[in-house]
Length: 335
View 1 (cartoon, rainbow, N blue to C red):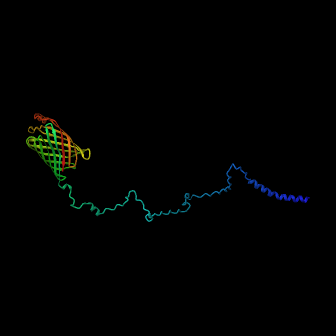
View 2: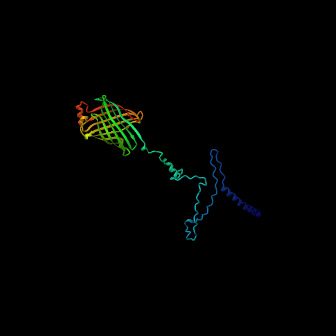
View 3: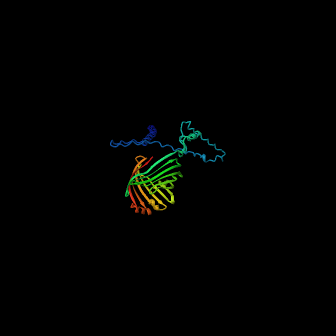
């Protein structure tokens, strides 16, 4: 009996360790509980073994901060950068900002010679003879003294520097010539816009004919005023002067408005010609013309005339109007 008990105790002692290991294994991994069909819970994530902590890295020495010269280690020289030949690689480089896209060739002697005209092939323009004729006013009018015709024109022949001028103006009233004169002048250009003129003037009317020596200037004043100022010296010490100024305003390319002012002065009374000394007569007018062509332009205008001093007295004695207003219709022609 005693022997049977010892054998049973040894068997139990050998079976208990394996039973404890199996129990531990079941405790560590419990069996999942069954879930009801109405609730679906996600399957728990599988646990992964946590990685072991990495060993600390050794500090890398900063070679750039080391003084290699003090340590006796010479620093190697940096290798020179190799220039990249973009042309050999087929890459076109854009030109610099201060360089033209197309290279400018050097100017040669042949280029300089080609830029100059052949000698004696093109004559200088101021040596060629030119001409110009202008009827600035050719108009009919209706005044207190009656109907009439008035003209004012000029022409020149010559070069740009030297010209021969012809000028004339006058009027006819009721078929009779009331005033008329003709001037023959030599003109020379003294600046880009101005000519000096000198010559003679012959008066046909009023009164007996008379001659004068003329000296004056004509040209384009600042602000594009066309100015003609001439002084005259006649026999017996008679002197006179005439000043004309006109301005052209382009309303359109063909419609032109032209104001005009004319002053006549005399040095002494001339009873035979019914002219007094000082400012004897003034005329102001405005004309509106339409240039059918540049050479031909009909116009209409309004002109006012005043007489002063002794000239006005002569007109009163002759029962003539001292001041007069007239409507004019005419044409401006040049060729």
